[in-house]
Amino acid sequence: MSVMRISRLSARTGVPATTLRFYETAGLLPAGRTASGYRIYGEDAVERLAFIGAAKHLGLTLEEIAELLDVWESGACREVKAGLRPRLSARLAAVEERTVQSAAFAATLRAALARLDALPDRTGRCDPGCGFLTPTGPTTGQPGASRPGAGPEPVAAPGRRAAEEKRERWRTAPVACSLTGERMTERVAAWHRVLTGAPRREIPEGLRLTLPASRAAAVAGLAAAEQGCCAFFDFRLHLDGPDLHLEVRAPAEGAGLLAELFAGAA
Image 1: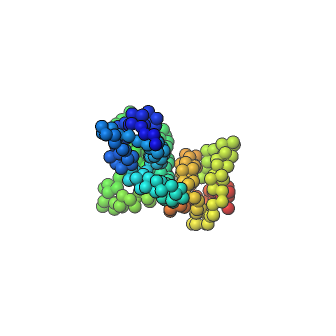
Image 2 (image 1 turned 180 degrees about the vertical axis):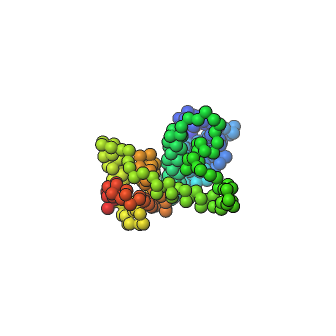
Image 3 (image 1 turned 90 degrees about the vertical axis):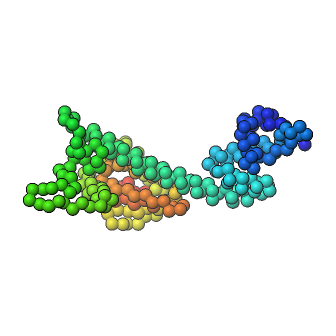
């Protein structure tokens, strides 16, 4: 059996010697020793490092890699697959959830930019009326402010108030889409592709569709884009294990466009 020292193994695999030593300490890469104390490795170390590298690329922890290496050494591929699948599924779900959150935040930033661009330039100092950071823009009064001849206004809980304001903005948004012609056709086709085969059911003011969680990124991206041209749509995404539940609502005036966009899910 041919053996190689650490410098040779490093040259063949591109893994730095310091990392090879660390893998040995972590129990991932056993090494023999010469009479002089030098580390030596067999040819199997090359395949072992390839396995470790692939597992790291998929985001597995060193502890998980160590567990899978124990199974990998037995040579039963089906057992490696059985151990790897739930770990990859868990990571995929986490990544897709972050993607949904990122897409929602991107929509928030787009809306903030739109409000910013719509505000007139003022020569005076900024005040709450500027509405740069408030979700509803300029207001005529602040919660709890005194009014002539009246006591303080009741102050709603922040979370409830924000939800009510969001609902009111959705209800009062103009039912119109800024997309026309070819761009509208492309958007409808994109929705139909991502919703292919998705069962749906009617809910108050809209539809609820169930899709594979693997489509979460595509759905979130389309929903975020839709907010930029059709703000009257209300999207809610919920990841539930292998499933993604998408709820879409629109005011009565927007029911026709809602049906056009999501008819492909039937």
